[in-house]
Image (cartoon, rainbow, N blue to C red; front, top):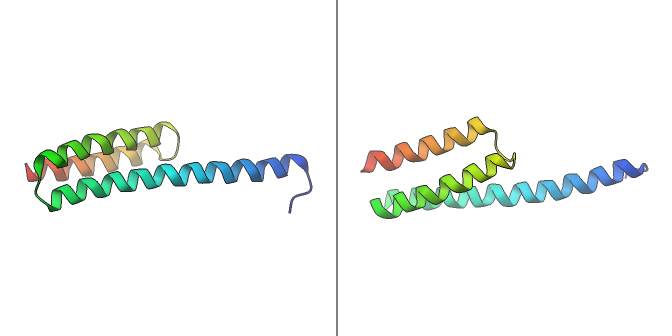
Length: 87
């Protein structure tokens, strides 16, 4: 355990940020799974709606620094490509 006050604070801040990042990553993964499920079901309208929601979640995560902007862009691109492929 840290003895210095700033080190103790750093531990608490890191823990809070890790929890926030985990929550955001979980939301992104769930939204991606919804897009994949709609693609599997061959439901074009649901896939497009889920893609829109997933894109928003991924962009939000990138803006908060949870994902690097290139990672976010890659994820969105792959989802869009999969949805467009089925249309």
